[in-house]
Length: 556
Image 1: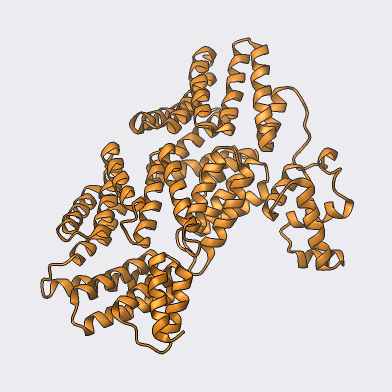
Image 2: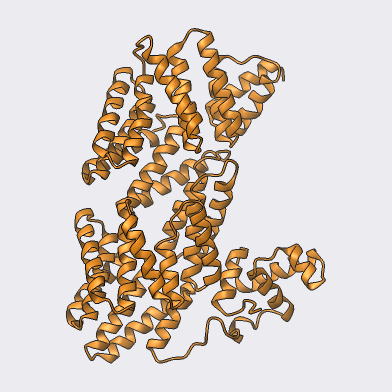
């Protein structure tokens, strides 16, 4: 293949969205041939899509210079904007801001009338939104949309719709905002925009749905994002976030093992250079899965990692403290987090945790205040997920005041909503409260039935802390989480396999285990494979969680 043929092959592969093929072909062509402006821009986009971020920025800078050389100032400004926008996204704020300023200067000096006029409005609009000035953000996005309409620029029009939608949501105009988000998604699913714009819109829309506790839309667009990623096997950006969104939904729906696998895959993707800040969200999600199954030490470590990456560890870490018997520390964390919370969705989750912690500390008045604010949020947002949280919180507070009959009405409504959302863990937790209300009302038989039903769900999920709580309420001893291992979970493991499992749970690699046990690394790998098979596990983190759930971890 000649270099000219390679360039043609790169163009054809680019049209097919075969990104790795296009990247290889253009790399061959660029080794000896000077690429034209169109090819430089396409090569840059391709490099970004296969994860070659630094090479992509260098190519886009070269495209910018080529546009200037040709006297195409409008196109040079367009390339400068995108270069700045991408640098800012990856945390290079000084360089990124400089390139955006260059783009603005290029179009303002000769007063060019071009689409770049709209693009350079976007960073300022996003900054206004992040600083809490949603009306100013909406105005800037609207102006960008008007410029997009004048030039027929679909990418800019779609980004402007996305911006208007998120601004309206921040202003409390939920229905209008969601309509804009849906309209932006139509352009994406119809294939009307470049892949980078498509990925931005997918992720921002799904995150907006999470802010609104709009589970139906979040599930629909997450599935669409997964299909979009599957049609482009070589795609690197956005795949990690897609896996993370899927994991969050899997956790809600009780597929915890699947969720753990998706989180691990997401972490690998998000950690690839340059790592994305969403790595913190992956650590938080992993910590939650560990906490729910009683693997408290791994959960602690993952929450700390999440914090290091900028993801607040609350409310999960506060709830971990509660599970460890240190409710005062957990409550102090929640109070401080509530004082700082700017994100409405995070505030709702903090309030939910505050109710639980206040009641554990006997602070019924504090629990009622948190539950009332949570209920007000549910009334404003009108999302079933948030309504279920609010009803359960108010039911728990009402039960604590001694009105079991009123509590039952709220709790049964919450339970029904959780069932409709296909959230088995949350439904089972609500049934435990229903059981306590039945017991307070003198109906011991119904209390027992509710507890037994909840126990089945917790056992199926291997939700050890809640399982132990239910057994205590049933008057049944279950053994300590940190005591001797239950023979029923170790009969299938040999003494050596149990020893290897303990070392895996301690975070040791196969090589370190081999050195500790004075055996070959290959033998360790065989033991690990046997452990996975016998315990029906597939990852080291799942094995670690299993060890902590069943008291199999090392106590030395």
